[in-house]
Image 1 (cartoon, one colour):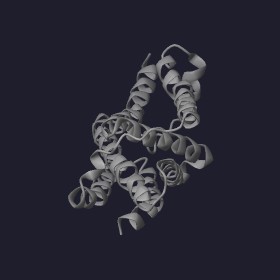
Image 2: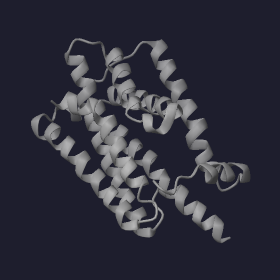
Image 3: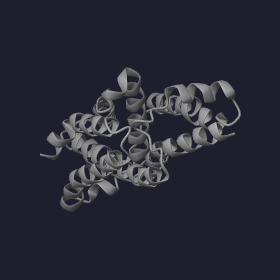
Image 4: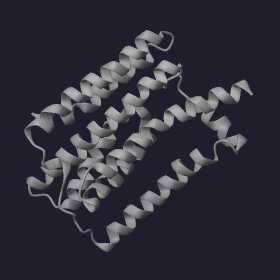
Length: 218
């Protein structure tokens, strides 16, 4: 049952995102969309938490050298394409213009209240998706007899497919993110590190919003 729910998560995500985007000029409707995310994600995650707590910890799994290199190259790629631009945003005008051009005010939090609620969204999604995908689904794949490596790859592909409403680039970047989070889950022996990174990754939308708002005031 839980596996079925995870497989239809892409449909659930599309419904929630469309609901929020359709409320671009209605702050209350957008805030209700954020509340919907809280409700749906926790309703999907709580059964996993209540039924089985083994997903919080896992045996540290060694990967072969080739896969270690591949994952660390993906980490380096993410640092260069996501983290570094985030740091350079205040200093590079061209980068600010590009971010402003791609900024989606229909989805991102604009008002102070929405930004506060979005912190809850980032925490909710960070915790719940790591429990559902890395903690449960990745372990479930291993329990079916798949190797740690194949469990990591398949779970990451499913995770990436769940972000297809972001287009092909969103699917690819989400798959890469899933590979990194799954690798960290296996190599650190638990969900804590992936959850923290996932929350920070999603919360960057608040910083971008506030930065763009302050830039327009200057």
